[in-house]
Image (spheres, rainbow, N blue to C red):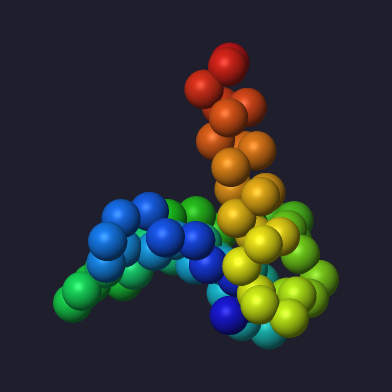
Length: 68
């Protein structure tokens, strides 16, 4: 797990790396869904807390998408 961000009380968006591939997963009680398979890595390493970099990048990408 490279990072995660809460999007609800019990829901999270999680960035995981499996081998050389990174996946964005939606995680909720009793459910894990692949939201996106990244063609280029977002992060090389997680920080100490694992959340800040991913949360900031996700917010920036969502904000960019909303403006387009």
